[in-house]
Length: 304
Length: 304
Image 1 (spheres, chains in turn cyan, brown):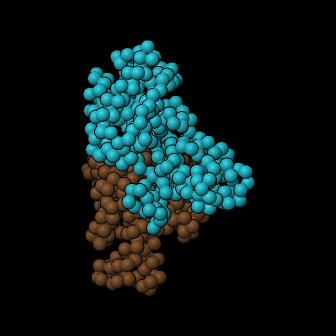
Image 2 (cartoon, one colour):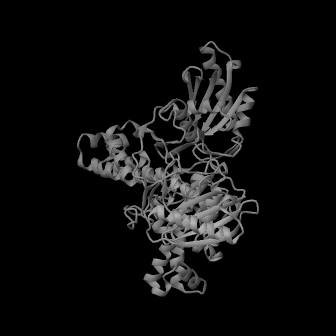
Image 3 (cartoon, helix red, strand yellow):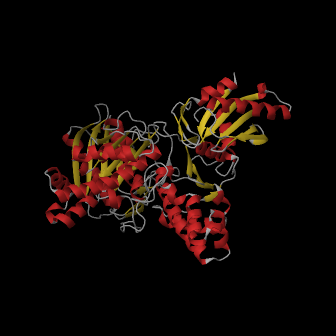
C-alpha cells in the first residue's frame, strides 16, 4: 500500500512515499521550504510536491491510500487540530481538514512528530517487537514517544506525552516554555553543545564536536560528557522506574555517538533505577526519516 | 461475593472481609502484630484470624471467594513472589503459594500495596470512573498507583511503578534505597514532618502538626508548607506532562489537610504543567482501608 508521509518542520516540509507492504520502504522523497506561509497555502504545496513525486514514480494521486502529517507541537484529542506548534506559528489550526481538502477521498492522519518517530521505530526500527518501549530524541529539545501495550500513548486525556518539560531541576535554567529547570534543558543535544561552546570555544558548539573530542581524549570534553551522561542517566532511570520499558531507543544526533555515550549511560542507568535492572539502551534506526515514516504509518492505525 | 483482604505492613497485618456486591463494603476487620515472623507462620496466623472473623459473622471458610494480599514491596511479573519487601524482611518469598496452602481451593492474589490502594480508589473511591488516573500516597514514603485504560499499570516488564524513587534532585538527600535525591525524600509526609521538627521543635514533628500550625497563622509553618508544596507541585506537574490523568488522588495523612494544601497545589500544578491545564487534585477516599480493600478487589481482576 502506498502512503504519503509529511513532516512539517520549522524550516522545511519533508515528504516521502512509503510502500508499507515492502518493509516500510521509502520509495520517493520531496521537500519544500517552510517560512511561515499560512497552513492553507502549505497544504496546496504539499499536494503539488506529492503530485510531482507520484508522476516521477509513474503513479497518480489515486494510488495513495492515505496521507499522514506530523508537526512539532500539540494536537488535540481527536487528532484533527494543531493546538500549539510554536516553531510553525500554528495555533488552533484544523490541519487534518485542510489536508483532506487537498487530498479528497484519502484518509488523513495527524500526529505529533515525536510520537510519529516512535511509531516508526516500533513498526520497523529499533523498537520493533517491543510493545512497551520509548524513543528519546535528543536534539534541540527532548522529544519522546511512548509505546504502551503496542500502542502510542497519547496521554490519558489526549493532550500528549511531554517528557521534555517535566520539572527536572528546581530553580534551574529557563526553558523556551516559560518555566525553569525542564528536563530538556539538561538532556537535549543542545545542552552538550552549549557546554562545549562555553568551555572549549565556538568550534566545539555541537554535541558531535564534544563527543568527538572526548573520544580523542580531551579532558575537558570528557568531563562535559560525563556531566551530561549523569543528567541523562537520571532522566532515563526515572523513566525505567515509571515505565519499566523493554527497550529505550535514543534518536537525534547523539544516537551516532557510539560506545562513549551508550556504555557509561547503560551502566549508570543500571545503578540508578530502583530495580537495579540492566535496561537495553540502543541507537534509533531512523534519523531524519523517522517523522515522514511514522506519519505515513499512522494512517493505518486505528488508535494512533 | 465475600472476599478476604490482607494488608501486610511493617508492624501489623490487617485483615478485612469485603462484600463486593454491596458497594465494596467492609463487613469485618481483624489484625495481628507483625514483628518479623517467617512468612509460613504469618500465613497460618492470617488463616487463624480469618477463621475468627468468619465465625463471628456466622460464615465459614467456604464462603470466601478469594484472598487478596498486599505488601509494601516489589512483586514479580507473575504476581506470585515478593521480590523485595525491606520493611518485612521478605526477599524472594513465594507468598502466593504460601497463602494458597492455608486457603486451599480459594483464589489468591498478590499485589504491591500502593497498587492495591489505587485499585480501591478506582473501583469504589476518589478515582471512580477515571480510567486514566493516579493515586499518590504521601506517608513515610511516596506510594503511587497508576490506572491506565482502566487497568492498574504494573510496568512494561512487570517490575512495577516506582514513582517514589524517580531521581528528583541531583545530588540531593540520601534515600533508604541507597541512592540520593529520590522523589519521595521531597514529597512524602515525612519530609514535612522532618522540616517541622527541625525548625519548630519536636512537637511539630508530624505533617499534621505543621499544616495545623500553618492554618493557625504560624509564619514558619507557612513557609515550610509553601516549600513543600513547591516540590510536590513539581512532582505532580511532571506526572501531568507524562500521563495527562483525568484525576489525581492524594492519600496518606496529608489527604486530610484541606484547602491549605489542595488550593495552592492545584494552582501551582496548573502553572507548571506544559498544557497549562487545570488538573483535578482530590483527597483519597480510603485511608487505612485502601490496602485491604484493594487487595480483596484484586482477586476479581484478570489483569491486576
